[in-house]
Image 1 (cartoon, protein in one colour):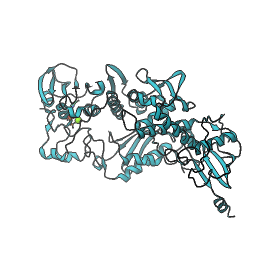
Image 2: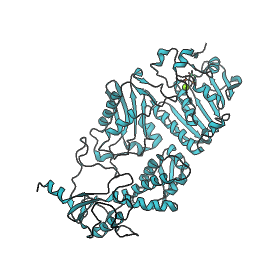
Image 3: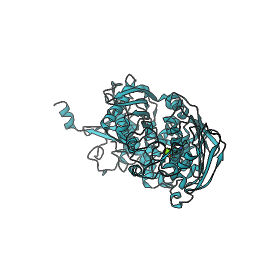
Image 4: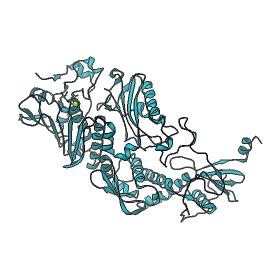
Length: 585
Ligand code: ADP
Ligand code: MG
């Protein structure tokens, strides 16, 4: 007698029915999770045409006997829970007994399976939910499931599939998540008959992360030693202070082995970074939370991506502690990239880094190459720019000097006016880019020698799928082998940044855009904002008084001079009254 039992109706109704099969990536998730539950040591995922044509998952797990193989295609057939009490403490990945029948009902489905102890295995062919064929098969122990022509019989659903490249990128990302959750399992991934990766089994999560994302990624992380906090155990890896990304694709949080995206997990991680990481950036992390299974309800979302915590406060405390423990003793500069604002003294964790030097008329202690601000368009400062005072008066502001390589100081009719150089550049470039995008693409600068970068297959798939968008941003790049990217040209204004930084930052931010085949106004705005931020980050200091004045004039010629596209102020002012109050004069 096999191990699978049909769920009694009463239990079946406790398990909220839902759609499991959304897209090829969700099929892969269900199949691979079944393989993991079956104790597989090696799992191979093959797919063709973004998974729409074929998905094949092969494992060396327990396999099924014939009666189980037939039964697993029935609704609510599961070997994983027997009675409603089990629902409260789920430890396997699957438990609904819904995935296989759902998948088999919308595809041409082939299951071949053999237990080690059985002489012959079983092959079952199903098409659109109807069993066509049951026969002996003689394959290696384990299970192979093929899902071909997904949604072939449900054209309405097929229409919702995105382009092949997008589906492939989703699918690869899903496999990456599963591979990170289970370094002890060897994973092979084959896309359109080409091997994308082959990951050896390892006991060491760091090895798995390196195999997937490269040495450079691993170097950005710090280990989180096991932390115990209020019944929650956490361990894993988290980015060094200052290493952030504009999206959360590299933030993987697992609860009892299941990848979960939840504000209950991501908010405390972001909170831990306050003062260390600029707003809008998120720390890459791979964190495993272990909690009492009865304290988490994973039966909230049909694909089990969301959960409800009985005690979110305990989760928050554990996440905060994990980040702090990892960062203890880590020098703030160790991981801080140039793009990150580590304001002196902003965070009690880290002592101030350097004292700003008051250096009128000279460049501060930081070494910056000085360069004329290229400015083809020095407009007159509009007298009616609407700003309460600085430059609308008749007398031009008097340039006082630069501070800390970051601010320009002006005397504006006895007020002290501070202009933040980077924010000002961002605004100026943004408005220029908007004009250019209205006409076509942003300018790009060809590299003398193409640069080859190591990247994850998921990133490469995304880049392949978004060629046109990247070209519009001025980046010309293509896949080069299975885990490298060849970059031929970069945005013309951003040439002083390392190519790797340009690519990862563009990728981070552009990924957050809604996927749309053509650029509309709001995606043009987002693109212009992204590239202007990049270009401003790499821009050099304006040289001397002349450069400072040009920057101010260019800024005041903008339509909205007083803030960056993201709302950061470009200027600030201390009035004579405010100055007097400060000195109690
Ligand atoms: P669930 O995972 O929720 O139990 P599924 O529909 O995904 O439901 O699978 C039904 C049952 O089929 C599982 O409980 C398991 O017993 C069996 N099964 C599915 N895939 C495999 C596999 N790769 N190896 C062994 N058994 C499997
Ligand atoms: Mg399952």
